[in-house]
Amino acid sequence: MKTIFYKESITGKALFNPTDVIKPIENFPEVCVSTFSKQIIDKFAAFDHVEVIASLLTANGENPVYNIKYGGKEIAFYLSLVGAPACVSCFEEVIAMGAKKFVFFGSCGVLDDNLVRDNLIVPTAAIRDEGTSYHYIAPSDEITPDIELTKLLKKCLDKCGYSYTTGKIWTSDAIYRETLDMINERKKDGCIAVDMEYSALLAAAKYRNVPFIQFFYGADNLDHEEWQPRDLTDYGLSDAEKYLALALECGLEF
Image (tube, rainbow, N blue to C red; front, side, top):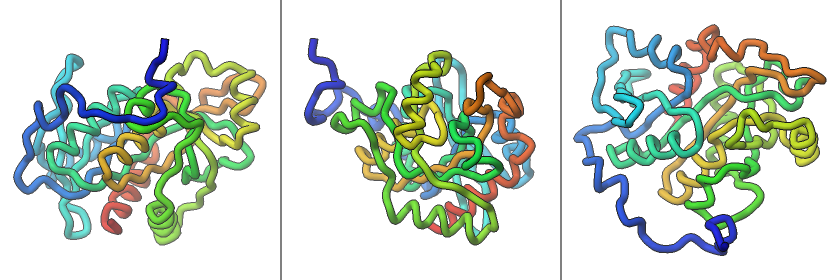
């Protein structure tokens, strides 16, 4: 059976599209920030000057989209759902609402502990070990971010004084099937971290022609004989201000 993974090109309009279920919102912020930690989103959503401007409706419940004023600019932000299909579906709908540029950040599993350490990660490419991206762009082993947008991300990191490293991200659908053999294989491919959404988001952004950047912070460590959870269950809350402020700074640079 010839599945989408073997198609040489992606053609044809979908039977229904985000714009069929989501209407544009007047004066929706041009820039939108998103992350996967509910704790981080809830912390900033509680600020006095933040307001709800829309909602993403799913079978899992209502997911608010917020507006925050930062550096004299209005920026939207919302919680992304974990996993490539759910994450990209929300991404598509926020584009339909009116967002034109995106800054994402999130945690990842560390594959090269010596290189990552306490650094943030600026991805140079993603290995497409998930299914969603193959519905947006033609098959390939890897997908790369826009060079100029990567320069913008590095500029913001330098400006804000945060250390970072660069390398490939392995995007996988199956968090409980990150086997030792597969981890070693991906490390040989140059991957320094693993996540569940990045390659799919890149593909969707390319398909919809919207600027998109993402940076990562290390959570659990897979570069060891035994799995080390570290601060995985903290969900980034201990450095919430740093991460979201950096994302907002990137939004100002767009």
